[in-house]
Length: 292
Image 1 (tube, helix red, strand yellow):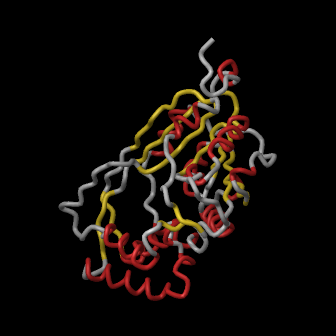
Image 2 (cartoon, rainbow, N blue to C red):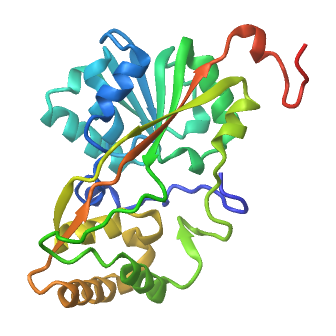
């Protein structure tokens, strides 16, 4: 969980209708890459923690008998249920409103537990320990995110690039310099170094998978605006009675950048960090215990 910040239920308040439309998808081939790595045969169970509108769970469920999504935001779960029904996956999915810290919730054991850009919002040590007990022998903890530091050149694409830096400045101009998160402010950003957290809680060493993206994408002003409102630090409720003013300023910025309000970008690659449940002989050691 971010230092000096307390979770509250408004973190993504109002963002759910924008999330699936605005966020870029993970790289094609993610589900197949995970299935190969875990030797999935369609019989296991998947738990997606901080599932949002079901992005990860619904992409992976074809390789499992069942997927369970857990999220504290009712709007996100409503979107997940709608999408599951649209994909004819309602009978293979279950959506539970709860914080990760409330697990295990009697949900049973799982072949894999996924965190799609969500683990940093949680009490990571507590959740890591709980999830370890929920994993079957040989099960895997997976952290899925866009590949950081990747250079995605838009040269030669038909439309201007999305003006991300200008959008960030616009958000700051309306909400102030401290990055908002629910009712609080992220003064120190979000934490990283999951490897250290997982190691001290009984997991084996991580394995890294990269699923390459790079495909050209076309976006319009509506999908770019949806991306903005899908962000925790630009959730609609944060603007209060200034939401219409911000929306108008954003629309002007996008129109100025692209006359026909169309934009080009490339799909990011996806990074998967995967930790296996360590053998029992290794899990009893505390953090910092020397090998025996």
